[in-house]
Amino acid sequence: MEVFIRNQLSELEGETLNDSVFTITKKANGIFLWVALAVKSIRSRLEDGYGLSDIIRDIDSMPDELEELFQYLLKKIPKPYKIKAYITFAMLKLSNEVSYGLTLNLLAYSFLDGYLEDPKFAEKRFHWPHLTASQQSDLKLSAHKKLRSHCGGLVEA
Image 1: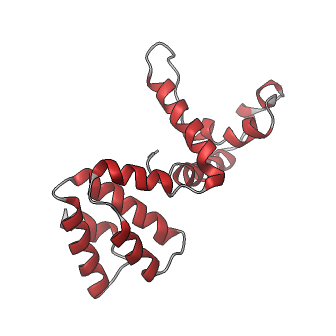
Image 2 (image 1 turned 30 degrees about the vertical axis):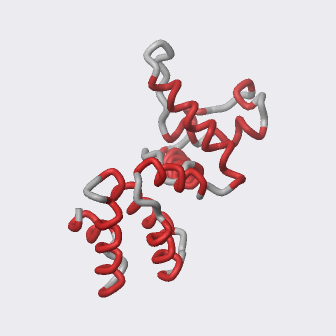
């Protein structure tokens, strides 16, 4: 677990990294899933530009129990994203049910905002096949970032 934490949080340096590794491994009580979720949350905060004091406060405030950590991460989802998180979790649940046979990929997810803004979005003419590789790549990258922020890092693509 320690190696994983050090690799994932390599942006932190010296004592900050050592203290973070110690605190995270202690709080995890040997549960790697706890470590993975906590580290993902911390990485997300680092990528969003939060400072060291915010990161350390986040680590200290994370609950020790796995179920409580899930609740903590869900509560940290910004209010404007909660509906999108709920919709995303529901879509993932449906896509995993065999009877529906749906697949959800980043390109498809990139159109969620369009559907939410205009319920007739799907009825309008859209030239999906005419998207260039660069446009598709941009849409996927944007969708990946939105997925992370909408769902508090609980969904990985």
